[in-house]
Every structure is written in structure tokens, then in C-alpha cells.
Image (cartoon, rainbow, N blue to C red; front, side, top):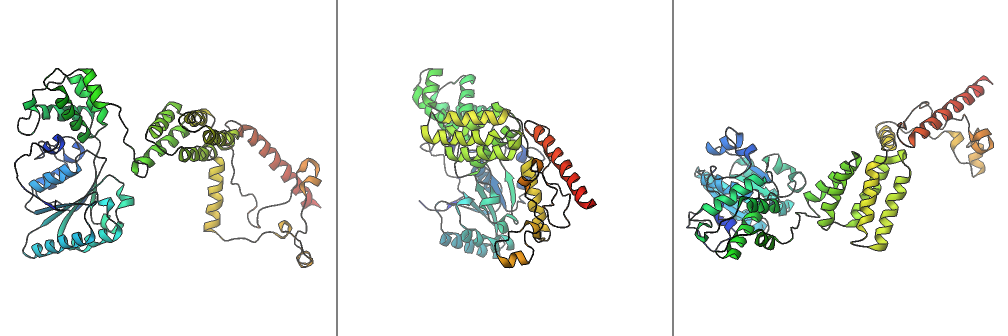
Length: 444
């Protein structure tokens, strides 16, 4: 089989999978992506006017990226060449681009469709740049990964990114019904009838992926073999649903972000749901544990100082017990972190201090705070004037500890939540006492 696939109008091959046979042939047959292809939408108008530019189609599997590229091919007056980021190498890319440039010299355009463009390395992606820039080709790339991370910035600046969304259950049901009615490409010849409730069950199982829904429907039609379709048969065909999850891809970061933000928002139910999604997807438990420890410091902080201890204990308990029983420790600490008082005061304080250091000068350490281990340092007055707190009443001194010119600078501002209520009172008393001692020193 060739790496390259040119546009053809060949008859439908009945041996191909149902999802392949049922690809839309026009915008009228296209299901979903109304935000891009609905009446009056910009992308639809560009396609209908045959005035498209280079684009990146970004979305999860089975939402119509390749189908949309093929619909564009059918509605354009351009040559259309498609190849895969998995199979093609740099030599193949250069050969296609050279041919496209020759065609351009005759006034013809070439649309190059690259499936899974995120699998191309930087050198391969760089090869497209001059051809896209000169208008020798119109590039359509398809990717399941975030283009911001997987497509080079120079190429992104020359292409419009369109985000495709998972299909809704209603859209997947409509797609299945169309396949059941279609005599040429679909399953009408099998005479199988599937109740709407079971079509909806398949749609829920598919999780927004048209390919999964049509594969399940095709398997169901084969399994029914002319018999009535029952709920038991559907469940047998579907078996256990495996959630879509790529531990190295976009969904990995989306789910950990959802878990973190649910805990921060004090929603234990949402936290448990996103945690379960990650566990069922086979995520590294220690990766989850590390994030929970981070949440304990970043979002709970001193409102509940024990949160870090609990998160660390959960990680160690998981190490001891292992899967699947150890998952319970992660769930317990996720719920605890969600319901306990929150404070990001230390997180913000550290950020503010770092910002001052990065954007300002670096004042010298005051002499009285410097160590004086040698005679020379003592002669230079290192440590002179230092007040040892433990030698003072209540271990409080009025000595300044910030560099000259930074007196009174405040980074840590405690909240009035949880333990920080007590910390705030203690800090206020400390500051008053230290100010009083400094005034006494000034009066001497």
C-alpha cells in the first residue's frame, strides 16, 4: 500500500469497516462540529467558496478530522494528497512538496493532508514552511495532541487552528440511524433493528467517538444474525468500556488539571470523579500522589498544616499496599484536601518574593546577619549587632532582618481560614512587639 492516497471516486468496498464506508461525502452528510460548519460559519463559507487556507484540525479520535479533510477535497478544485505522520518520512514529504511546486507553476493548487501531524519531528515540519509560505500547498494537518506543544510555532503562525469537539450522544445516535438506513454503504441489508434506547447506550459507550460507535453497531449487527437485538446482546458486544486516556498526551494533563481544580474548589465529588477517571485509565499512582502533595502545600497551606503530612502519608501507604487497595489512600486524601480550609498565602508570598528578586537589585546581606567564623570577618564587623532571639524575653527581638531599604515589606499575609486564623493573631502580636522593641532602640 502506498503512503499516499489521492482523491478517487471508487465504488464502496463492502469489506471495509462501517466507519470507513460511512464517511460523509458532503457537508450535508457531516455530523457534528456545528460551531465550525453550521450555516454562516466562517469555515463553511471558506469551503463552499473554495477559498480555504492552511489549517490544523485538533480534536480527540473519531470526531471527523480526516472526514472533514476528505469533504474539503471533494469540494475543491485542488489536487489532493494525503499521507500519514506515522508512515511517511522526510524523503516522502520532500517528494510530495516538489511535485506540488511544479503544479503551482502551472496555476494548479495542491492540498496536502497530514494525518497525525504531531508525529512529525521538527525537521519534517520545517520542510512544509517555505511551501506553505509561498502558497505552493494548502496544508491541512490533523492531530489529537495540543498543537501548541506538538506543532512548531512557525507552522502554527501560518495555519489556522480549528478545534473539533467530541460528538454528543444525540449526534452519535443520528449517525447510527443513518448507517442502519443506508443501503449502499450501511447496514440496511442486514435488516437489523435496534431500539433507540440501545442506540443511546452505544452512544454513551462511545464517549463522543463516531468510529467507536459505528464499530460497536457493526459488531452488533453481525452478532444479531437476524435475531432481535436485546440489551443483553448489546452489553455483551460492548463489554467493559475502557476510558479514552493517553498517559503521555493532552488528556493526561486535562484530567490532572481537573482533579487539582476540583480539590481547590472544595468539591470532593468532582475530585473523586476525576481521580477515578485517572485510576481507570491506568495513570501512574505516584504521579497522582505527587500532585496531591503539591496541592496540600499550594492550595491548603497553613490553613491546615497537617494536609502535607496526610498527603505524604497517603503516598507512603500506597507504596506499602500497592494497587488496587492502595488507591483508597489517594481517594481519602483527595477528599480530605477538598473539604479542609484553603489558603494559598504562602504560595503567593513566595511568588512575590521571587518576583522582587528577579526584577530588582540584590541588596547585600546586612552585616549583623552575616556569619563571622574568622578573625577577618570579625574585624569587618560581620555579625556585629546581632541579637540572639533565645537570649531575649519571649524570644522576640526588634532587629531588622530584611536588607536596607526594604523595611516594612510584607510578603506573607495569612487568611482568616482554618489554622491561619491563629497564625494571623500570632503574627500581629509579633509585629507589634518587634515594633515596640525597635522604638526603644531608637530612643536610646
